[in-house]
Image (cartoon, rainbow, N blue to C red; front, side, top):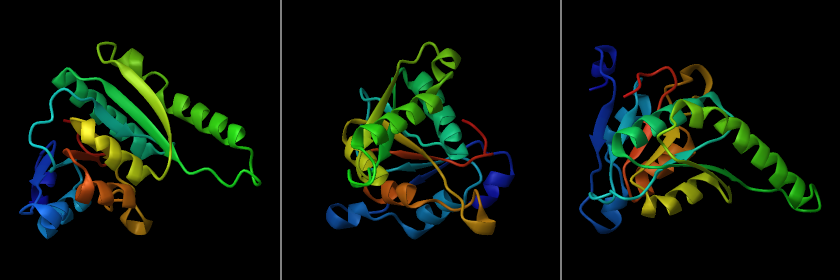
Length: 190
């Protein structure tokens, strides 16, 4: 299946394996491997089968992977006639280390910087930027309850940069309540 990525595929779609209950939370080995190692965007179909009406949620940070995720989120929102909600999640240090208001101001500035110019590129899509306190995976799994789709970038490690998925993507693939689209930097855009 991964060979398709080398033969002009723009996206690869895999299903979620499970028969309800705890089993429904688990992603099959093949689906996980394909989504993790694909060189093109990987759409993991899981959770609710009817996802219309909600926004396309995208997790953003200050990485190159976030730009790939934002591109896919806007393309998907355009095709679906949906809004984009970009979420930057953070865990603040103890207030004794850094004042909470200073951390929040820095995080808000980073969110605004990562969203600069996107509304101009996609004027027909309504964009909302949200700052959330909490671990990114937990925040994104939580908002997946009301989303059509959650989009995140992949994070490479070491010599496998761009091929391996970070912990946020891994957790979403196993626990999100809607489809998850993994953006691989340098991959094709749907």
